[in-house]
Image 1: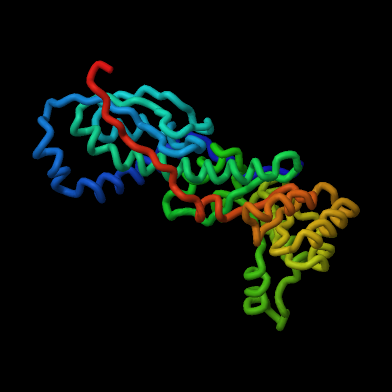
Image 2: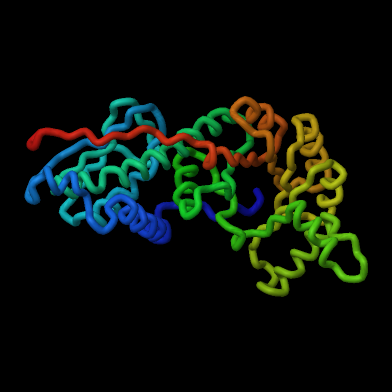
Length: 312
């Protein structure tokens, strides 16, 4: 199997991402004055208990961030988890119980529910795609079409849904696209018309070897939009080949040609992928299917905070 991109897990780096976003969430919700309603109606020493309840069926994601979220508002807030990230949740199911100062519970409610709803929505949609290709060798990948600032969190949610992460950012891998080839015509000396796909792969490989040394491990992927371009790049052995907007017949032929000449290179299908088409694409034999809609098209799952009688 070809080398894989780094997969996002809940770790210190991801926790730090959420802490930075949480500061923005606090600022946009509480401002400089705080919650006027709660300050007016809820005594400072009031204590409360509540269940975080999912209103729709789906896949949980973001629960790993709950302790960090609560700690930002009040260290006395306590969390009793009743579900795990990646697990199935049913309508009306509690994913955990919250207890502590009532004012802090009301302040944390919306940032917490927004986090869980957004990430669970992505995980739930991802699971639908993963289930749709079950039994084939295709894996479902995300893209960089993410909410600014939320990329690693959203990619974590894709993982919770059973998907696989494509590169997190431009720093992680080489992905040569048509714009790189087109721009070469403007930049190359001596009247050259631009890189051919195979030239671009060789130039990128040489650059990485010079900068990082042989065996650097950086993945080189190139996008092609025709079978002729595929034949050309198969001869120079990139790690991955992105088949852009090819129909199922072209994808099957691409797999046949790859199997005959460069079986170690994995093929990624992209473009025109939705829940109606993804199974047909997977059945062509490609190993990877990238789906921007996992993150840019997901609808948040509905979560609510249901107050409980103290002592219940």
